[in-house]
Length: 243
Image (tube, rainbow, N blue to C red):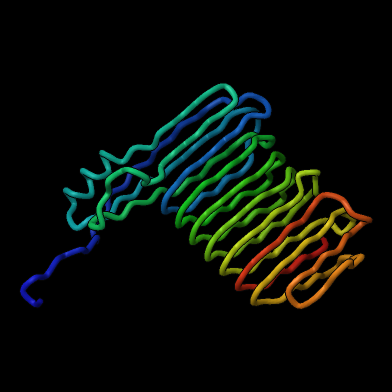
């Protein structure tokens, strides 16, 4: 065994910056798919999408890292009412001797429909007035000042959402190993359904009309009922807060 040493180190890094600007029709969709890397999305003015992506490759040698970076493609599918950016590693053929990631900074129109599908990625968004949907594996999802509803799902990650306005779309959060924290305006109207397996459910600064409550579930309304707030985790706690 000592005679069969395989060097799998990835100590040398190569990187570059990828930038694009798009125009999106009112009510259009921006979709981002990624494997490994941070994603941060903030609102911009007007109808443009500005994407800055830091592409990073780590390999055993400088030559291998630079060559892999040349082959590292980010695909674009662009239409008048839809922009899809894909840097996921599905089908790319990268080997275990390479590590690759993309860190994104994106500005979108405030009203855009934003959708994210990621693996091993932390996702942070703020100030979105349109619908927000995100799914990641092994990563946290953080949202602040959201106004268009949110549907998020992660595995092995924390969910933390601060909602400025609760719309008919409501809120849906699901994780397996992680906590969920959702803050809504205290005067919201909503129907709450929360479920945990190993954890606790707490509420703060909200006047609840409780239909059913136990250590593992809560069914209640605030403000007489309204859009759904559905929260579920397996190993973690749930906190619902009024602001």
